[in-house]
Length: 436
Image 1: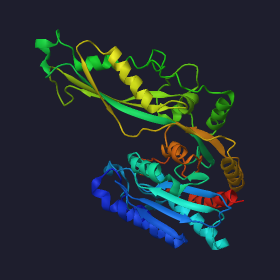
Image 2 (image 1 turned 180 degrees about the vertical axis):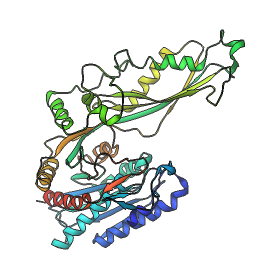
Image 3 (image 1 turned 135 degrees about the vertical axis):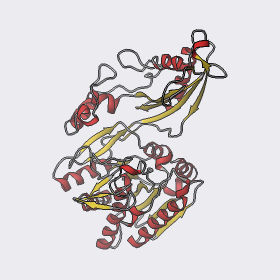
Image 4 (image 1 turned 60 degrees about the horizontal axis):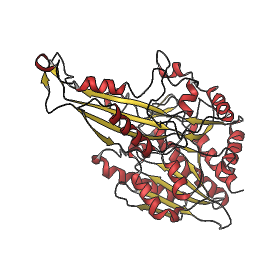
């Protein structure tokens, strides 16, 4: 429980000392588990915790990845109990970071500790790599990999930043989308104007922005930006079958989302659009007067935030360039636009389904749960997976044990307590299988 009491909120400078305290806690826990090397590695931001346990040069080297930072707990008033005072209710522990991802992180250490207690040492060479900036883009981890990748060279990565596709149904992330984002700022003049005096003669920034936003998709839901789909790898029959298999255990999209209707690119099922097709989402639009009451103004500035979720073989930097070109092409005359590219660039990642480590891990989890695990895609991103491939040239097996339905990043986040011993046993059994 102590790990959940540390408010390791990476986005808030006021918690910088807490981030160091959390890193120290993990380093001490690695030492207690028997890791011969457990270091705190400073970065330009929050520190990395890197542990090592070399047992035999003839054995594979497995890198275990996780992150110790968490999202802010706001809004605090919606928590039933304080977010950093863990509360156990009806078999669940409620605390910020319980599911994402401190329970999984601790379970990886406990698993190695159990293996060492049984055999005297782990069955493989191990590198532990725990970062404190996953929730803010991992830029300093990527800088470390670019400069010191040789120091963490390995044969396979196990990412504990993962969960189940359905309640009590084990599974592995096998495809993760890439991501990019930007903000577009529209300006039609130097000042807001009286709508009665100028509204019929000068462009309204909100109207200009609304018309521009409408050009991003066609009437059927396809992204209408020229070149957006040029690099997209089409879904194969096996891709579609994999999505159907995973969808069979997952909740219906409408039931899960609370949406009133479905929408999107024609020719694909809702699940195929979520897990296998690229998207462009308008995350926010604002401009002019938004306070209480009325104000008769013709605004001169308006803003829009956009994110895209990308699939193989799209390049997020290229997509941002295509968006900017589209805006320039469709901008009304006399209107200025500026662009801010947002942090959080991620490349799509997919692991070959016949990868040796994935297959061994799947066999182990199948035995543990007496059920075949599901290989499932996710519509979100775990950017570090593509960076491990880029800098270390290794694949990542994503295995985690939180259940769907926990409100990650939202109030009253929870982790089911009886999943913790299963996580400990699961990670231990997978590590053991990788050494065979």
